[in-house]
Length: 241
Image (cartoon, rainbow, N blue to C red; front, top):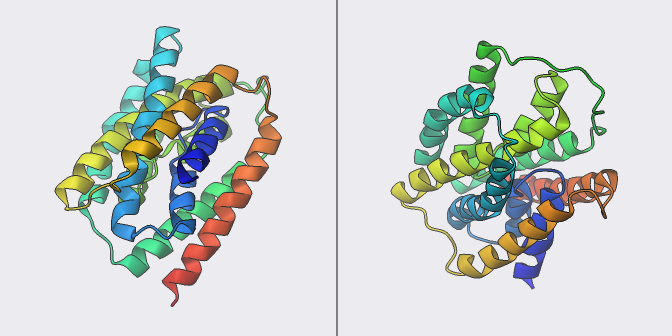
């Protein structure tokens, strides 16, 4: 049943160009996963879900690697620093809760219009954004796409279509680096991750292929925001015990 939930989450996130790291954490929160398994499991599932999207976007020539480079250059070292850091369970719960609630708030923001003009990303903006998102990604186990996407659109650094194409490889790289750091720090994914991964990749393939053809992005955002918000509140309760 949990594998099915992972597949559904991956499908929904793929329709808006994301891997699903925050929702994976939300599901694991509801399933009472040990905090030591949540981060590496979420990172591994991010890699699986983002691999197909990255391949598909790259095959279509949609990824602007030159634009993505400064974001990745800044995020990789901070992601590794965050991944090397093992937080006490209560502190991890509190930080992850804030991340989930913040992600839920971001998803509630209305969909940006394609007509909004956008321009080049300033180097300082890319470095600052990449470094900040990378640190949060490493600490908690999110891929970072749910934060990168709204920033790119809000700052008018990329169009929604460009943002989706940039998010997938950004998530993949940061998740891979974060997983290496987490394993080095002594944290291992759940033994059942291989089964969850099958659901995640199946959902990602279907969601990326369908896009928004069958699902309303607005509805998807509200459903995901509700799940993330509920999980964030639950983790916050755990952290205050």
